[in-house]
Length: 250
Image 1: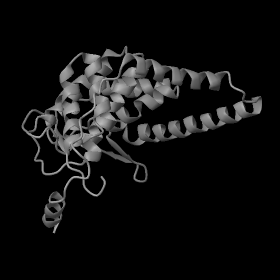
Image 2 (image 1 turned 120 degrees about the vertical axis):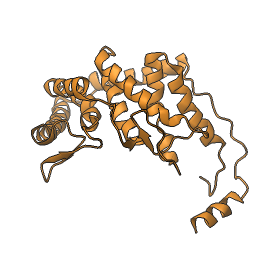
Image 3 (image 1 turned 30 degrees about the vertical axis):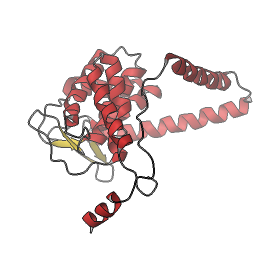
Image 4 (image 1 turned 180 degrees about the vertical axis):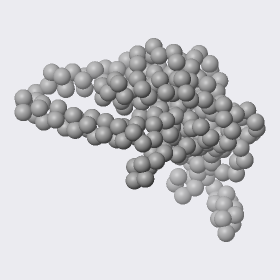
């Protein structure tokens, strides 16, 4: 039934003419414009017209968010520190690989830093840098590992003032291992990635919602390292997506 549906859709004419992939380079002028928007928003917040009561209300709300985050982090630290996932009902943790890839900690690291939870951030950061290895057997989700682990490491590196070489080295290693999945005949990576260099995972279908949202992390990694391969590989994905036939207005 699925094959018949695909055949039926492939027989329809495309609702759009061939789409030319846009240039994905952000100009310096566009970056300055975005920076100005952010600056104006911050200026209005700092020098705005909030009354003392409104300011206290927002500060109280902000502190409640910080308190809730610390509460969750403390429970994870107590019951399952270092585990990829935390199960609060059973007070246990599990890993995606034999020894884990720092999934939970990397995902929350930038949040801890932004919230001023420095002690918690340092503990998580030190665990990742000194105890996590990506040289492991088995497969991981390319999408989830990119947005949570690689993205978490890169975000933490950014908010550290782009000065934490240990975090950057870890991000480069993980990005290099994940990028092997881009070496396909179509340019579209499979849903899973093999961290250790022992072949490519079996690939049948990939979700556009996943492969078309890997660009931020790998383009930033390319910028930080000067390695254009990271950018070229994810740009190739978008070129394939934009040239693909469209059905039912999608």
